[in-house]
Image (tube, rainbow, N blue to C red; front, top):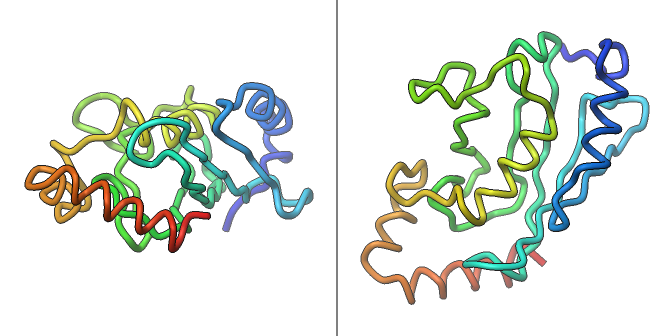
Length: 159
């Protein structure tokens, strides 16, 4: 069960802060204004391997938020070392327990999640600790062919 953000003390404030502090490459949409615990994020990278793509994420805030992170899934099929083709995401701040100390903490907010997801296309793009091992190995073996596959995925799935 999830609890709508607007029932929490910080909910509407957090949504307003999120909407006011989005990276220029991101858009947040709440499909149902009565369910602020479910949102969609579109990331449109303006540099790097994924430039020109439009990647959609779905975020669901659990009832024990902010003691645990929101659940996030990529809805766009992507060739990425930190996102599987089925939408699972490797991002430290989405982990409830992280050995590197960068995982979820109660003082984090949805704004942190959005900025983290946006950074997966730039400075947090990590080929050394991949979730999609095949994509990371592809990049290691042939960067040009990796870029070609990313471009093909963008044309097929991320427009």
